[in-house]
Image 1 (cartoon, rainbow, N blue to C red):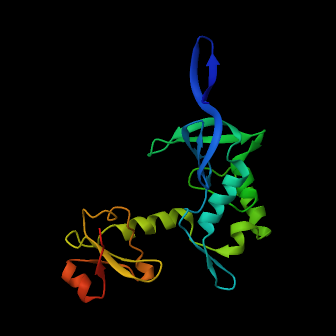
Image 2: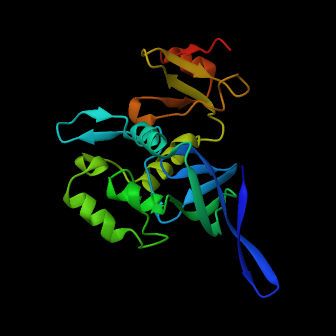
Image 3: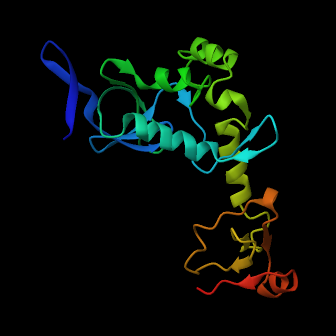
Length: 214
């Protein structure tokens, strides 16, 4: 159930937030009673982002954060105060569950970072978490913001005429997708893993890639 939180002054009354049951989208984004909410002042790894341990092991830290946040808050009722609306139309808000600031909880346990570009509210909390090497602070990772930029650059074809996507599957199979095929739009090119763009199907085949079956 969705309930508006209102702030009223005299005869005027403006909706300033929302109250509702939480569905976790990722480490810093929630659905609260059906309203998409981006938590203000923090940034968490993207779900497909990886981290590297001190021993050099790569692990799926983004998925771990999303799963941990879901285990901690999904199904609970949050009260959110809206501060802004982002470019994706999401409410940017501070949210609480049982009087606890969700964002502060995540930063305290090393599940998210202070997003200094927009707020310094959680800088001190992050420093304490880093000093304890808790959560994400025990691994090396690209900042979530830089990861998103890198991913966006990787998705942009370097040459407008070379739009064939050379993808490598989880079992190492090299498959190319041409525009209009079933999986083309959702196929991401990770150049750091050896994936690449091709200018023609013939070029892809010559490089050892096979055509996608659909």
